[in-house]
Length: 471
Ligand code: SF4
Ligand code: SF4
Image 1 (cartoon, rainbow, N blue to C red):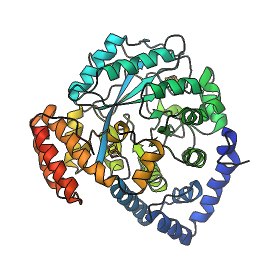
Image 2 (cartoon, rainbow, N blue to C red):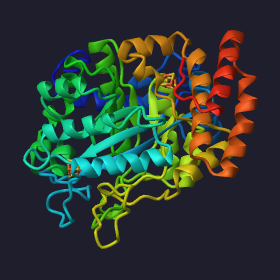
Image 3 (cartoon, rainbow, N blue to C red):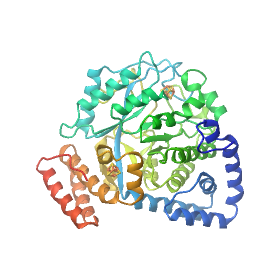
Image 4 (cartoon, helix red, strand yellow):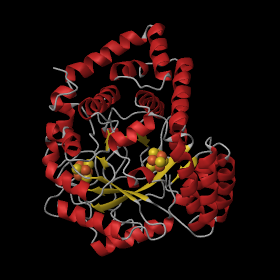
């Protein structure tokens, strides 16, 4: 029985509710009056529930789709402006006891197994800092023997020990397998930012087929992980499904129901939603996944999620090509990686083709500076801001700030100041010139004269060598 406040995964992602939402949505989408009503509600920037969002997902006529895309862009710009937050994934260990059929790290796959020593973690972090990164997403396979929680905590401590040295890593988000409340408490104490865990698919039967062995095969334990994490004090959690493992309508609906469950239970929804799609990896072909989605469907999913959960950050996968990234940046994406590696380590010493420890192939192989340059060309503001996390504005404190619109007084100047740091310390001359032009233009759009004055002063001080300003 569907109950968004239940702690039982089978009730907050109730299969019958998902199915009836999808069926009802098909019927309701046939009546233009329903679409108009939902679009009018969405335009108020208050979000949509999973049933309403499922109706919009059925829209196929080009004119209405165009309105959905415009609305998604408008909502994104109203809440996030032109800012795009930059981050880098860092893979620390690919030991894994699970056998997820779609993943290059699964235990049955005969790839090289590697785990970085703490010395190597430091080298990787220094290499990432030299590129200009401030925000990392740490990735680990699941293996309690080769990669226990103590190893994960050691890595986080090593990274933070490197920090605040004129441009070092300022925020560490973590993606580890579903674990106990006790381990989540330890992660919180270690100072992580967002805890990210992809559900992969919300369809229980398919989930169990895709995860035949290992701890991850327990659907309920995995699906209830965010509850344990939030109970343990982790305020910011990131959801995601791997579109293509199952029918996209089902996973889209399940994803929004999961977000509603967190909001109903903890008073705060997910901090981020990631939208990866199934993609090739070592010995994995997308042809084995008949539900893999087209670019058009992918764009529609991104736009409707943006409309449904306006205040949740949206992360585009490292897997996507530059062309796809460009499209969805205008539909609601707010975070993007640059210069990424999906092999273990790989930033200090890039791995050779023979070593091949990557989780999946990357389509966008450009460097961070090339991505920053490209974003500037497209009129976006690449932001290296980590201010909220460092000021303790997480969970409901972050959300109430965002929802009250106050974030506009922090984000824009913070984005410009952190971009300025990047331009001073790491950018190629052409990127620097473009960035300086953009900062000059965007300063004019800061509405509060006092904030504008402080931002101008701080920008000048950054030029003179000072760092780490924030509102
Ligand atoms: S998806 Fe995660 S848990 Fe599954 S095989 Fe890959 S690394 Fe292991
Ligand atoms: S001020 Fe907070 S919400 Fe705004 S960009 Fe910085 S970290 Fe993100």
